[in-house]
Amino acid sequence: MTGELFLAIDVGTGSVRAALIDVRGKIVEIAAREHDQIVPQFGWAEQRPLDWWEGACLAIRSVLDKTEGARERISMIAVCGQMHGLVLLDDSGQLTRDTAPLWNDKRTLDLVRRFEAGNAPDSYLRESGNTPTPAWPGFKLQWVRDADPEAYRRSAVAMMPKDYINFRLTGEIAMDTGDASCSFLMNPANFAWSPAMIERLGLDARLLPPIRNPLDIIGRITEQAAQATGLSAGTPVMVGGADYPVALLGSGACRPGMGSDSTGTGAIVTMIAEKPLLDPEISNVATIEGNWAPFVLLETGGDGMRWARRAFHDGALSYGDIVARAEEAPPGCDALLFMPFLTGERLGRHRNSRAQFFGLGAGHGMEHLHRAILEGIAFAMARHIRIMEHSSGKRLERMIAAGGGARTKLWLKIKASVFNTPVLVPREPECGLMGCAAMAATATGRFSRPEEAADAYVRYADEIAPDSAWAEIYGHVQPVFDRLYHHSTALYDDMDALSARIRQASAGT
Image 1 (cartoon, rainbow, N blue to C red):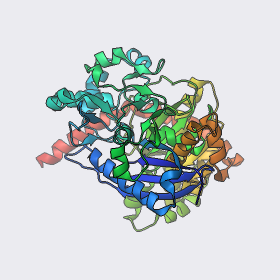
Image 2 (tube, rainbow, N blue to C red; image 1 turned 45 degrees about the horizontal axis):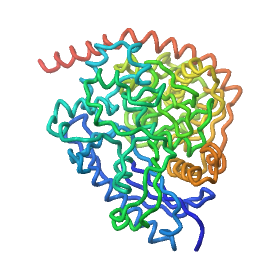
Image 3 (cartoon, rainbow, N blue to C red; image 1 turned 180 degrees about the horizontal axis):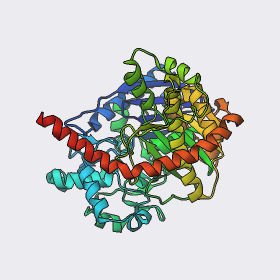
Image 4 (cartoon, rainbow, N blue to C red; image 1 turned 60 degrees about the horizontal axis):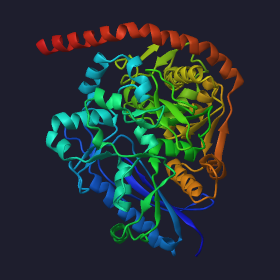
């Protein structure tokens, strides 16, 4: 066989995947190698960077062995990876800590609270582009400085998971604009490390690598990497990108006004904009094509259905059964609302928010409860979309759905009608790998811009239009949902105190 190929590598939380993709954007071969999370104590989550590298080598060898002449046919390699995982190397390129805290690691929570107590949002939003959260590598570096000072002292550079794979492939070190933008240490105005944020967090600037464009060539496969992976020495490797902005590109969400709904256990709601939106409830990540992706994380996405399945049916019904019951209820659920904050909120002022059903009456049945959960999550997403629309001055033109939520037609129709915007479902669910292919195609000169590559590569299996009757009903429900959200915030601290008193009283009985 002949024909140019791209190699895409995705360092995920559950596995490393490698894929050979042809110049038309078709996946020719794909392989994955799983790795585990390590949980040393409650709230912590780690992985071994050496496991990522071993998995990458095995996955690469697997796809090479299954495709004739692949080694010589690869013209470009692009790596993307899970965000926020802190990898530390010494000046000889050896790990100073065997494990890297991941995006979902909460060990820095006290550091975040201390920062919030001493700093008003207006004092850091313009310098960092983001609001504080335990995920950010800046706080992870603080934790290493305080909890493992010897490792901090020996470290020469801090990097993200895909950067470590790039280093092992090429011997070169850099961080792309996407990962850097979510470090809490990069100034979004100039795409440079912020001296103000570095000083405010009490960190050492020497640890921060060069920030480079994702489409740049970081280096070429070394002889040592060639022996480990089976790749040809000298094959070019791109800087690559953080997995989320790469997946946005690979889903076609790459122009201002376009949105993304990535619903799994939680939900990530994104709207592409020309600049970051500086709001305490919104995070911002730089995109591959040079825009920004303001986003909001809802802790309860698909987890709302999982909770209902357990709480109402003791796991006896399938998710399909639950959706079928929800379809029996009318849109608006006869004025029953669900606030979808079963585990609080990730960002903003009310991380201790609570879930609730409101408006429950004797005429409501199980079908209303199930549909209210699906609608409530959509209303919570829409609340943030309106904030993004107001800040950016652009209306959401279309939403692209990904994740497990993209497989539930009823939910997609509810969302399309709540947003009053068409929802598109990509035909190829491997959006991260497709984003890598679009980057590689641009870097090799097949397209002048990554948006053009996405236009050529991304096709949609379905487009769900808003139901005009549903949209009219939801247009009346949304303002009530928003007012209920704001009025409920006054009770969250009281609920925390009440919970503590009940626990104390129970312990004394």
